[in-house]
Image (cartoon, rainbow, N blue to C red; front, top):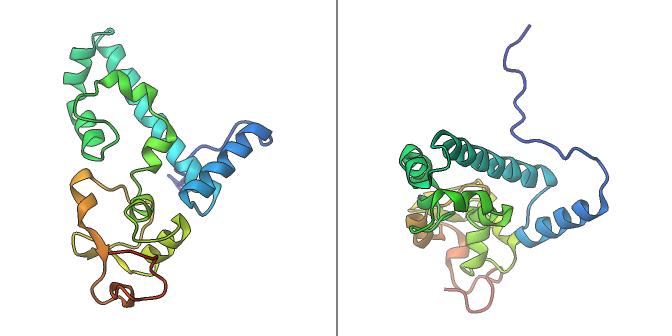
Length: 175
């Protein structure tokens, strides 16, 4: 009997068919260029974990936000480093986060938002095909969470044909 065989890192929806939820998921998939709903569900599960941790810390501190922040200093620092929370947000803000707050910090979304690709799907393709670097290192995972400090260090790989600003796959006016 094998132990730890459950490697799934996300929860699926409780009800298989809910028209409104399916429509919302389809919208998010299109807006962020996600490959499938599993990527969305994984992000939703990550958000659920953040909220669970914030509730646990607030509960441990018996509702005192300042004590909860002291207890969860590392947790909050990580969320601030990734730009999910701003420097002046307190722990209660974690409970109000939306899945799009996390999706906005994916490498794929940032490459698209910075204008290195003309669509989120093209951004995904550039990343998977090793055309994008973060701090000079090639990254092939579109789901990589980008820290605030890394956001300005995203560029085309110097050995990539896309590094040429005249390449036809690059959108008009890209640097």
